Image (cartoon, rainbow over all chains, first blue to last red; front, side, top):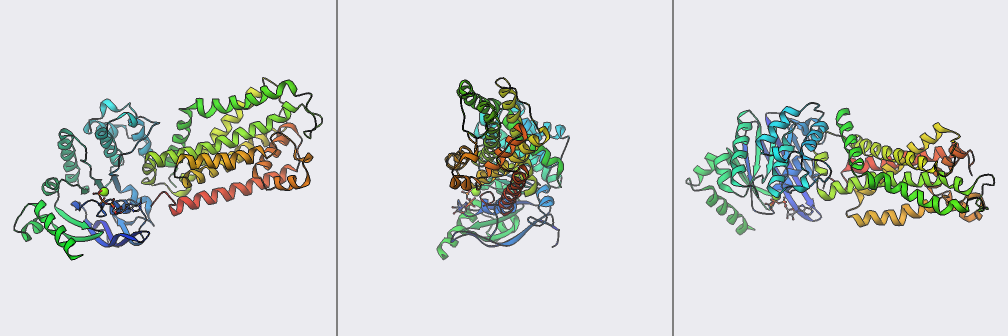
Length: 246
Length: 254
Ligand SMILES: Nc1ncnc2c1ncn2[C@@H]1O[C@H](COP(=O)(O)OP(=O)(O)OP(=O)(O)O)[C@@H](O)[C@H]1O
Ligand SMILES: [Mg+2]
């Protein structure tokens, strides 16, 4: 297994009962890429992402993160990965700051206060640091999830619709911060339904529909091949064509 | 091994129940006290429960103590797990570099701490009613520890298995509660009809309560070493089962 890839997905299939949610997905994401995973609702984006994070067990196929197999070398693989899940969640017992400390602890990081502080600052959560998650609004919870995913400074960061329900202000700050992380060499994988976001940020794009990857290429190539139309138009064309074929 | 990570998860388990200690420590103690209050006035008149030379109230104490330990150790890991699943925050633990064994260890250790604290509290409160001279302190501690371990692992199994709170409540009401009440908390099995005695031998809690009665009062129905062996077997099988569920990702990693 070569480790020139940040994420190496080989022939992943996932079935829920008879329904095949991922169909033989093979995808390689190079180190340092800003990768956009796009597709309509129910296409299988979150399932694929959760498979990478080990939250979903694939029916067949294998995945490695920074050269580490997510099952065999799960510790190294998990240390290399930060996941911002799509679904909002709750934690009624601990305040935000303590949650971040606990999470650092799970990754055996003992003294992480400096970085936690920085995360709280960037995510504009300073005022919420002593509050419990259940007391926060949806957008604030999203910020906490982003901070939680970054406590261990993972080399690969996956964001599953991070900007859903987030106000303009944070959205700008978030992208600034993510771009900064990208510059520092982190690999970023992003799903979003805001295609302009993907168009401006990502340098590589894959489109998934009905569990199949229907295209994967660099953004410039993708746009060039489609007469430099807007990504949104290209997306609609590709998805339509796919649906017609079925 | 991710020692520090395991320690932090354990710490979280303990802080979780301490932050609601009214429910997790005080409530079970009040529960035990209520039993003692009810039986205290009749203690000396009650006969025929099996032990001739002890007051019935005193006879009750090891059983009540163990009953509190069992229910609370179980409640600790099971509610922690089901809450984590229902609130969705279980993923914080699942994406961390923790092995199935380490997760199990942290949950079970949390349950043991709760079991020991509840035992201590019931013991202290029981001391207000009776002079309790523990005959074998070390064995008493070991039994509280081991029984909490078994129930912590059981709770983890139930918490992973249950999808909703009422599944868990069902498990508690239809399995745990009958087994505790039928395990000899209120009577000695010596006096039971043969068939009921044979059935008691299939009840894991019977061994825990009987052995604890020996370690505290110095008398029991069966040999304490048999009980301890039985408890160790339960500990191994429940831990193996819990570990296996975590390892396969049953109901956690979809
Ligand atoms: N636990 C599950 N059991 C059964 N089916 C599931 C499960 N999780 C997801 N699915 C199905 O898998 C398919 C893909 O879902 P997924 O969440 O991956 O889509 P998505 O591309 O992330 O969509 P969205 O843009 O809405 O987030 C859907 O048809 C969904 O119903
Ligand atoms: Mg999704």
